[in-house]
Image (cartoon, rainbow, N blue to C red; front, side, top):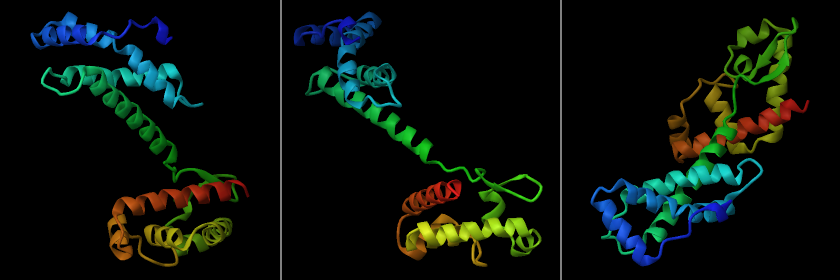
Amino acid sequence: MSSSFPNPLTEKEEQHYVKLMEENDPAARQKLIEHNLRLVAHIAKKYVSPVQTHDDLISIGTIGLIKAVNTYTSKKSTRLATYAAKCIENEILMSIRASKRIKQEVSLSLPIGTDKDGNEISFNDILGTDTDEIVDSINLKIQAGKLYRAINSVLTPRERLVVVCRYGLDGREPLPQREIAAKLEISRSYVSRIEKRALEKLREYLGGE
């Protein structure tokens, strides 16, 4: 596909169109974008994966290119292509990181079993549930037992502590992430990462039972 893009501009041509763009010539701006699309395709090729195609990454990288052209001036010490390459790569990397964050989000509504009536039970039904309510349902108590076994089997001591404190297990009061962070003397964002990793481990363990 990159072969269908216009050839890169020479340094002299680039300077010419940058000057015109600074004089508010929209055609010059478009020219600078079009003649750097080959650069987008080249950078995008490095990040192709089973979940992100070359075409998808070119679309994302083009957004970075447009941002680069819009913010570039002749006063910069580097050529537009050099400046744009960083903007293109940053845009692609931001998109990849955002995709990973979405995948790592663990839904507490994820079904992990059923009650005696065949209704699905999720993490929300077990985590932080009042003890009296658990005792009222033998089946739910069994599911809670599975959860505790999973917590003790697959989590590291720190992950276990975060989950127990966060969801008020073992008769504790549920704590917000900032209080857990202060207790462990780590950042709130680190607590969040530990929590997500722990819930993912629990989901995989309980899903395999």
